Image (tube, rainbow, N blue to C red; front, side, top):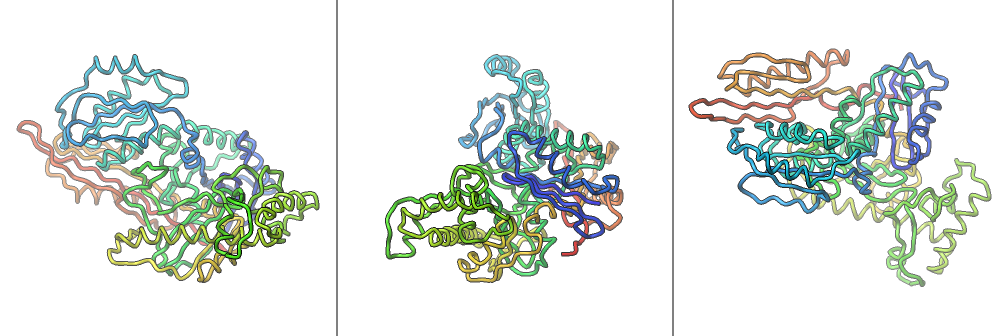
Length: 566
């Protein structure tokens, strides 16, 4: 039995899937003041009448890391950079105590100038340590020689709660992206660790011992214990679950727009001939360009709980002008009025239009929505129903405007999918597929705004949890070969062996894929597809000695572990 748990900004959803069927599902409101009880209550509800001994795997997805960055609820991070000669890199997007240090390793990995110990002592005396304060250290060519990053981490180990070394996150050379990736890894570390501990504590209380995985931004999975060390990999874990859920619930063949409309945000994806558009260079989040590979997705602050307001009062004969006076989000001030919140929301507009009859609302609850929506409607000389209809149309219009903007950007450059680069391909969506709690209500408004067919599946309200549950186990291996030292390492498998001085990138590629295929057989009875994610080979010269530095990253391709009966 597979368990999928998705913790969003508004709800935590859970599903149990056995023999290709959903046997149980739950949806609870997230209490951000007590995540442990939120998780425990959802688990209690989900497994109350199931045999927990049948649970074979638990897959999680969460917006915890993403939301902490977007909402600036991150840990304090000091940043130490060694950029060497050349471009004078600056990082105005990083709000951090940033220190540049002397020393240099060249592009071949050769030590040109060692660290200045007096400089490090001065920096240590100026930087204030703290119980929850973290550090990120990045040197320009650490992917070819990490010695300085390792030395810095050891030197400052007693001063910080956690330290990220840039070379541990990616083998690619892009220094600015590696700096941002390392910074974000330390920035979200404490928040994600708290989430992981709450998950482990809740599962331990229920005596559940099944392995726990979490979705990465590319739709793959990683063990929760590994995710704690590199939580930056879980940024956009929630949108990855959205995509996997859409893949499980729809037959995807055409160019499509995919939407996940939640309580707080709407996530936007695109398909080309049924394949997702991809971010091979790395995702960008809150002005931070990273090295985290991901399915292309963009989140906007629009959901069922988005606050409604009016920018100016007064009626008008121009419908286009009238609708633009209605503001939808991006703020979420809390729950809708109908559920005890402080401000009128899109959900309250749905109440006015009789679109939430499944909740069996009381007259008192409905009255709260009517008062709040009525006050806004009065400013525009509209009835409550007229205002609510316009508010939902305005929300669909905002989504349409963002989709058009994104398509213009994507179609102005080569389109990357998970399988290939399409140099001259234009994305021309012929349909929209939507999931999330408000999916059914929104479908007609989206169809009117886009003027193309809009579909939503059965179980649309828990699609993310379904996607999380069905994401197949993936594994990543990293090969490091140094022909000068004549050694090859795959740390994940504890492989340390001698190689010849003529060892090649091609040999490394064959070897790591063979090792990955063997490891894949331990994860699944079915054959899992593998791929090379990153590879590089650089010549190194040290005096009269020469050699190659070979780095290869391979992984099991993300996908669904099984089909599901809709």
